Length: 359
Length: 277
Image (cartoon, rainbow over all chains, first blue to last red):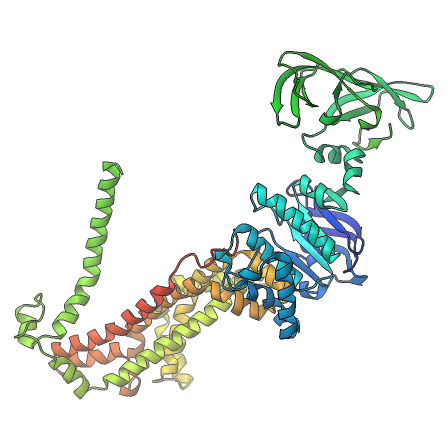
């Protein structure tokens, strides 16, 4: 178990920059999820922590030790790959002990660790089987087992669930959460699935185009996204955005004016008249007949019924579409005009650079 | 299956059957006639041996009058040692060229691919001079060296393709596990290359075993002759003793067939199934 510190990390392939000045500090025993769209550099960052890819600049410390020049095996990490990467010609037991042979773990200790990991992951019956005879979920558990027996300081997971079917993904997700509770180890976990990120993480790192956009607790990212990218990335369906500008400033209050919603006031702070703004409201925060500063009207185009909720796709005055979540059995009919309101903490305002402005 | 597909399938099979007959026919002819008396070989060359024409005279003569066992063991030694070296060095070179980027790796790969395009026989005179000055004239070592050089480029080429198909995650996983690079090659990569190695082995063995040219120019004494060269003496010495020639040839065919049968079992696809989804 150990902390992990990344300072000014850069990665370039020729002229393309994959990671740009990444700084991140992860505490002992923390479960951190790196999330972002494909190509954002999250997997590269993980591989650099593992030592599989070299850095173009910057430092990585594991357990307060600079590991830049250390080989993967010397860093005290264990990695679980998306493809599981089990050795196909070795049975489960051999898969788990193979690496231990080379790191000076005596045979009796190897057996003890395998037995412990097998019990933890319910692999006891599978130890003599070969990977080709295992199901996807079992292979995934073996891959995790192979990481556990190394007793690493930091676990690295690279999209471990994306090859599993939906039901298995949920149960394995729970298992990983339990495992973290049991082992209390530091985990860095890469995924593009925000549900995985929200459910598993102590803290989420949202990445985009090789940069960290925001680091924070799952609910903080959801309720207080630092910028437009995070606001649009976290949450499903995605947040609705409305173009706006500062219509006027009076008595320390700025008037947020737009075509597709009713104008409202917010603290002016450093805003100036004419500044471009973006107003964001999540579909689940738009309610019919509530009270709040934000009010928008739309004509229902389509209603998606999911059971616990329905999503109404509405056409705004300016012709674009926004989404509102509707609860209960009474869903609006297509063609109906609906007025939706959002309360003040649920209305997010971003400036011209896409950064959050306090409302 | 539509009639169109059926017609095409029949057409394809006709071509394949014709090709098989063409390839197997001469071999059958050689083996069949090696068990017949001389008059029957010429009288009815296409007939299988029957009670009146059956004879082992060719085999008796071969064993009595020549060093066939020496030739045989020479051929086996040269072929197997060459094959082992080609596979070992070929796989290691292929691994190095595909897995590591180093200064000159592209140039080296290009240089090796020249070996595929230029037949080694073009260098016969230079090879002969080289072997003579190295004191390796009339030794099996000379043959092995030439055959390794002949077989390496193609084996590196084929094995590189196969190594690229081995999931990169496997090597990364082994590295995270702390497995040293040499052990990654021998214990993770090499076992997965088994089908490829069998393929390369067959491609390597057949031309070496059948080669007449290099034993002819590099060996001069009976103790270093190979089977293919040894057979030639029946053509000269006895003025075409067909019984002996055919018997010796039949025996020369046998090991290649045996090796092929053994290795073809190794040509199992799907060995990597289960490694990655």
